[in-house]
Image (cartoon, rainbow, N blue to C red; front, side):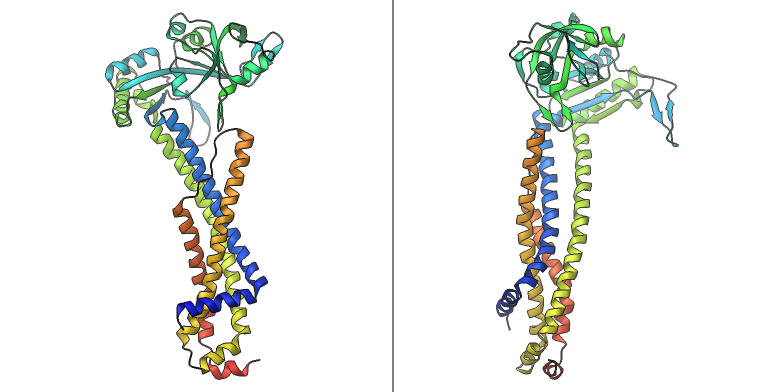
Amino acid sequence: MNFIESLMISLNQLMVNKLRSILSLVGILIAVGSVTGIVSLGDGLQKSIYQEFEQIGGFTTIWSWAPDPWYRDDTGRWIRRNWEEHLTFDDIEAIKAETDKVDYIIPNNSFGNLPVKRNSASIEGGQVTFSSPELLYADNLKISAGRFLTALDLIHRSKVAVIGNDIAENLFEPGENPLNKDITVGGMRYTVVGVTAPKTFFDSNYDNRTIIPVTTGQQRFIGNDYLGWIVVKAKTVDDVDDVVSAMRKVYKRRHVHGEEMEIQTGIDALAQIDRVLLIMKAVAGGIAGISLLVGGIGIMNIMLVSVTERTQEIGIRKSLGARRSSILMQFLVEAVVLCMFGGILGVGFGMLVGRGLSAFIMSKTEMPFYSVLSPTMIILAVGFSLFVGITFGVYPAWKASQLRPVEALRQE
């Protein structure tokens, strides 16, 4: 008996026992579909992050900040350091003088939950950011009305603000032009010069943000020239390492504890995200592995029942000259076909699950979120299903091949 004959007999047996075959397929289908759907969402999430990261030039971005004055010791207690370091505009100028591979550097400070008001209307829980004109490009922002911050705003410490779309809608009447109108931020008056277009990306709500010149924020809120963090843009990806090296030299030269200054590149940030996604995929794979194990056991049980039911058939075939290898192949192919169909259907089910969930997420968050199923994942899913079929089909097939013709024919 060749493989084609074994395949045809297997398909015929599966058709004869339709309900049993369908119930066996369901376990494999759910297991493969669940892991396929979850992994497709993970790959889609990765695609969304990479696209946004590319738009803001994240691969050439470097973030740097001074250590927090407080830290946790080995026992989990918060302890205040006996020293403090702070970044300033002098550090920015020193970095620019140290290397010519920097495109621009953005000084930043921020406050959360400062009330933003206009007359009787107010909005709580927004983010107040002190920054510079380059933030427009760094965060890939669009201006829907007015303008963004300018260099003159920083020089003159202008009392101006660029507000997000949500703030404009909450503080002003429908159809009212917010430009050149006054608002108060933390009790201090500012003139609105621009409104950013709607933008939300994961947990960052750009529409609920108020942006004012960093120098104005230093003077009116902080009371010193300290910066919370800086964003350094290297000219090319290849320049990132050289810029980081230049920053470390500047910090060591200008600060007593310069070696403690934090520096993180866009590539480092993506590596951390990739590790989180890898863990998520591993967890999904583990869950699917358990499901496939249960499904495989179900396949084995079904095949053992099939061997018992077809004992006389096996005896007749053996008495007519069928070899053990032929009987073994017939039952093994039957198990493999069952799992292969389950795997293929599971991939289709996983695609539907992934696309359905991605559409639901996009409808709720209004941010790009894809379901991406790579050819490699499809091959792995179907291949693993075949592996389950072979693994859990070997014993029933071997048991069938070991039946003696005389004893098989005696059984009713």
